[in-house]
Length: 147
Length: 126
Image (cartoon, each protein chain N blue to C red):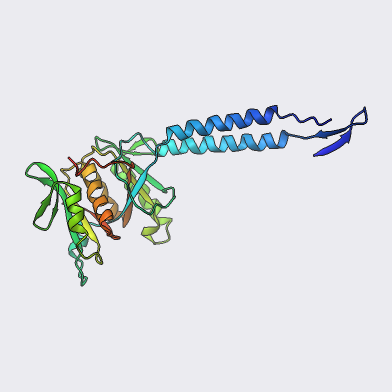
């Protein structure tokens, strides 16, 4: 901030806004980029309506696998084969330094999907060394078990 | 005379405001149910002093239900009421049959969570 006298002798507060606007635009670009990323990892899935855990950890899962109503596996917006999903998870497991529980794996399965699709995925993931996962839910009154 | 050019800043702040309003509307809140993951082979190999409870989510007489021992539950509240009375040290296995929908699996996992089990395992049925 620079205060300088003008020609009439009065003091003028000359605020240079350019750096701030630069930074603000950088922030906008950053948030827009991360929002796009979140949209890619989360497919349009009708999740089971359950309250979920009482103690919620605000973490972003490193691996998000979407299971559609027809049993298709979608990762980062693309349809993956089972083998490709397992290969990807194996790579992620290698980055956990031998602690499989360190892998934060989120399964977002459609509530109308058959459990056989998720069971197949679970069996393959156990073979790959996965020991825990999280099942995505949408907060609300449950459907299953109330019919 | 104080001259501050605030127009650009106000433009940017309005842009930010609109951006956050739009993204807040688009992203719906989600929750999670954390479970362990085991296969039936691992489960049968357990030799612990305390045996875990086993809840099955499967079709019984053509309709989805929860099975605990010999008892069949058609609604989650009665399942939770029974689970709350059981010892919880060894945790609970939710054995999932492939013929039910995921919402029933989530309901079984949620019932175990609501009943106070800290160790919940997902076991795909063979």
